[in-house]
Image 1 (tube, rainbow, N blue to C red):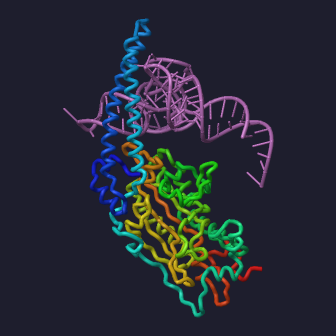
Image 2 (cartoon, rainbow, N blue to C red):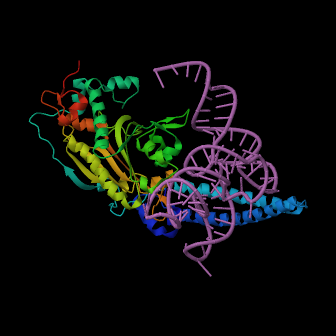
Image 3 (tube, helix red, strand yellow):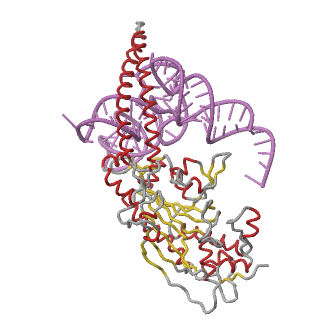
Length: 425
RNA sequence: GGAGAGGUGGCAGAGCGGUUGAAUGCGGCGGCCUCGAAAGUCGUUUCCCGACGUGUCGGGACGGGGGUUCGAAUCCCUCCCUCUCCGCCA
């Protein structure tokens, strides 16, 4: 959520920022409604002040056993006026909110103005594309031949786009998760969280999925709960409606969760095998910081995610999203794309975003400054560290042998308990 | 799912129609005391909205929403949540 006071003070800045995010220009309507609201609030407050004063007088009169009927009659009128005004205010606020909740965060000054993915900026790469002296197979053919991935059974159980891992494949998936969690806890100092996988409307609104992305989430209608599309939702909402002490910041959480996405209408491009699925596993990192340090934290978060791929010795590149490709709540975002040699493609395995005070304002997450005891909004950030399906793609394709087996790098062996994946029985 | 109890400030816990933003205690912060600390003691300690000389004034908030009333933390309705017991269940 943006700050209506800031918009009021400097509409031009917001106009420019929203344009950069290809977002509608409802600013004039918004400012008119804001004006209307403030005028009505002032009138209502004046009447309430009158009512409070006279009600006090009535109380005195009654105490002294004197008649107060004329004052009571008068206040009855005032009460009716207040009711009408408050109803008017409620309606104006409803219209105001309807616009406010659809306005995206403004892009940071370092973000390139652009339309789409095409305009994203290359930041850096790590390692290089590995070379092989035998013909490569892509992850789906590899995994099905090895018997570690079974989409056919999953389709029978649930539908298309649900992975089912078997044997060493299941163990490898679990190894990824445990390896990443331990890494972030032990090397990067995050506190581990195991959150609920279903979240209510307030939570999904707080992180910015609602209202725009409602159709992208699975909804349990009976209880009005959403299957989380990312652990960002429950973990960020841990501190919803709280005022933290500055001394508590920064807060660093990491959490594994299953993630559920309907991915409606995304059939066609880039959907082969594990590249786009309805349910996947992800280890997420979430940070809460004071505003002054959020961009430093953003860079640190990016490095925390990168180190996972470095530890697994997988080649990747980092891009900085242009304004038009930024998500609704993000002010700045890096994507990490891992190289999959069999598919000959880069796959996005991590999005690392700074939401500044946008989510904090929606979720009402604040902190009290030590210096002047004033309360203001924290900055929230998160990044995948990382999502497993595309990691699996890159991993299988990078570590394949000419015999169709998969070599497990040493760092992962304590988690898998084996050093090679051969055809499953 | 059924029955009962309850949701008040950072926490505990009063108030149950008329200066109650809210007693009291704990915690926090500041002063005094002390070489220093503890103890003691005095003071202080919520957030949101609006107006303007930015500090003051006005309004609002006692789980959320609605109602009754001149006036609601206090009465009524409704939803949510927590606890206890019963039922069901991994």
